[in-house]
Image 1 (cartoon, helix red, strand yellow):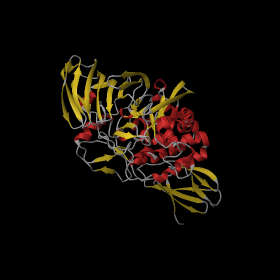
Image 2 (cartoon, helix red, strand yellow):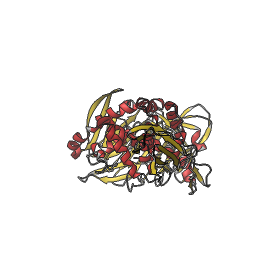
Image 3 (cartoon, helix red, strand yellow):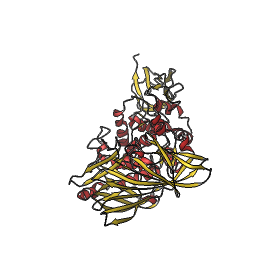
Image 4 (cartoon, one colour):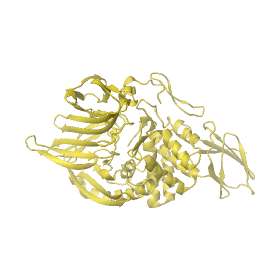
Length: 553
């Protein structure tokens, strides 16, 4: 589950989220150098592109230490000799090799500066291997506060998990910790653990090595597709495996379930939700994006997360979200929230990934909206509308959804329900379900395995819809104001206008007059509609996310 993010104009000055209705939202906290180094494409990042990671890491439960290495294969986009690698203390890099030589490096907070013996020319492929070890940050509240959780399961066995969204993958392994650069050729993940434990990670399990002298096992996992850093995870415990196959749009999809031994019987029942989820989302979004890497659901000690091809699950094997219905309508108890929401991220978050943390709404707004699409596919449109509209109760309008660019700052947690309701509103503006379906599927096809910006997503939807939706995106993403539709009824005449909107906002809505639907396009200027008969009943279509206020005659 993902939360927070923001737009860097210059370090240390006031920053603004663009757009607004006379309520330009100022971010007054200056960006620190560490935030800038973490959240921006620095000169020491921009000259090289990650092709592949080969991560090897040993988890030592008794001392709560990590020890490992990451071989980074990269290509040079321009000449360069100074490289930024991210690794958060108290973990430390101990050695960096480049071919037969060792590179010099120095630390600046969460960043290491690597210096090559001589400048690497543009257009070459090369590799460095980074060795590291130490006691990683322990997560205090996974997945919202990242780190390693050195826990125990219900039977007292070791139960160890990693979480790192927001804080960054560099909290437990060294990498180029920025969303704009994913390893084009995927990665290998080798995890060494005590011999009585099982280590589950992303992609497919290729082999298990046994070291009888050291009393350890090493689990070798491989990911063939690009993967965002925070989607990489390791889960260690007394796991058992069962599997099934799903015949979907991309052929036969291998589905693996990794659960603690004592959870298996319950999981066999609850995880029947997975093929139902795949059926719904392949309908709405197109084929599952990672057939080569399989689909995996792994039980953990926290609610869950969207780790690519290794979705984690801790929702107590019950429908709803931790026994709650996010919509307050009862519809949320018809499905397992974590299976549906976190798996939706395979399309929005893992297939289509944000370049900058400020655009996290692309992950969370669409995943929130996907919940209602799951409901619509299996239970019908009316209940889907009840659900998505019900989630509005969680919207705070405390700050804009888009965060501060270049600073690893997310926007408001409203990116979930407000983002979802914005998309639901846009669907009803377009008012063509076939076209809307083609847009959702088109996003995943045309941005297949890519990192994107908000502007790309906005432009794509507007272009495919044949409408300029720029002001709609500005209103809901960049301000905290919900459009206020003010109206007055007098005999046969309806007078109406918008307030609390960005300049030029003219979003069409549908209203019901005496039981008949009418389309109108309010603006800030007062307009009138004359009905052929006296207006006795009037209602704004509930699918448009606006507030309505009736004025006295």
